[in-house]
Amino acid sequence: MKHKLLITVILFNYFIVSATEITVSTPQQVLSALSSASAGDIIYVLEGTYTFNSKFSITRNGANGNLISFLSHPDNTSRPLFDFSSMAESSSNRAISLSGSYWHIKGIEIFGSGDNGMFINGHNNLIEFCTFSECKDTGLQLGTGASNNTILNCDSFYNADSSLENADGFACKLDAGTGNKFIGCRAWQNLDDGWDGYLRGTDNITTTYENCWAIKNGYLKSGSVGAGDGNGFKTGGSDDKLLKHNAVYKNCIAAGNLFDGFDHNSNRGDVIIYNCGAYSNGRNINFSSSNIANSLEIKNTVSFSGNSGDSYRATTLDLTNNSWQNSLVANANDFVSLDIDLLISPRKADGSLPDIDFMKLVPGSDLIDSGVDVGLLFNDSAPDIGPFESLTLSVNDINKFEGVSNYPNPFSSETNIVFNLNQASKIKLSVYNMMGVKVFSIPEKTYSQGRNAISLSRNKLASGNYLLVLNGRDTQRTSKIISID
Image (cartoon, rainbow, N blue to C red):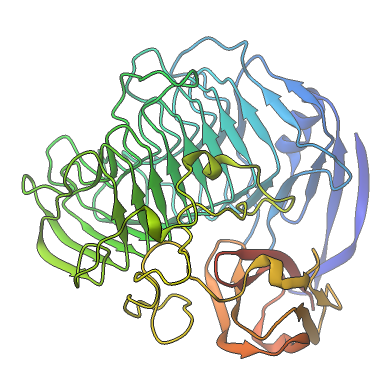
């Protein structure tokens, strides 16, 4: 195990706190580093397979603006694999239990646990670019009051349990807290649901899903039909059919799921679906009149080629500018591709979603500019209908957007954000703290072809780590910026 004192020191009330950088290469070193970590520490994991015969817990706490980081080493060519496949199937055999708060865990693959791959009951954590596969329960689950966690650019797939009921891709359910977010995540071929929001023991929480894809859930790894529910996004539900799980879906896709793409399941809360796409599910959108939702708002969304008719029911209902309204009829000719398998293409090196043609609108489609402004980025006179906006910035239009896209970095007074465009394009820049909360944004505007530079003043940011996000047509690029005193 290698230790290195970080050059950066952070001042708190005139006391100097030094953070430690640790490199680990064995399971024993991993456990030792986790058990002694303090705010600001960075634990790097070298590539390779790490075999664990029992679960482990992460209980230490970082601090707001001073996270504990547990990361794949930057020199790795592949992500470390944590193999728990020797564990028997049992509810006591979760792989990793995260009860600590203010952690950043990035670039780890978790495989074959006897229960959840990761169970989170801590708060204000960021889980990034991790995978959870072939676990005998849900890949990643939030519960026991877990709140304000962000799951970013993670995949969960091929999870299946012998009870044929509980293995979802992701779940914010039962007694979870509020304010949790899933951004850029994918769930495919899980025995039960892609995402499960079923509640028991809590009420009136809100979970947000942005740019998330649910694919072929209800089917097993082999491709055969499983015995689970098989929904893409199960928005809620409860034993007494009274509990409210408020949910916000933006630019999400449900495709090829065995039963419902977006599922009501007696959720009594408020559900918002903006600029989403549902294709070839058993039923694309299903909100029934039994145990009716309090409100359902669907705007700028495509529902196409479901195997059963959709159902939209709620006490308060707002359906506006969707693919089945205003004399619009979505059909295969509207899209560049409807190949569902594209949705599980490899991610980019930085963990962001792949650039694919699935559900991209072809030029001339009547779904272009037929939406209504819901506060998301759009080009021309009005938003497009569906999960992707056409004719604005694509990743291929950026010929320089490096891993560290600002200089200097770290910075103490001012930094410059620089990018080059192949053509004039409309983009938006935002800064988020490491919990996924937007600190501020630079208003959307059209930037010129060639080099563009934006000056960011230190007085807008407290010291700490932040995510700089560049949004364009169908891409979200992120990089870390560091503000110091």
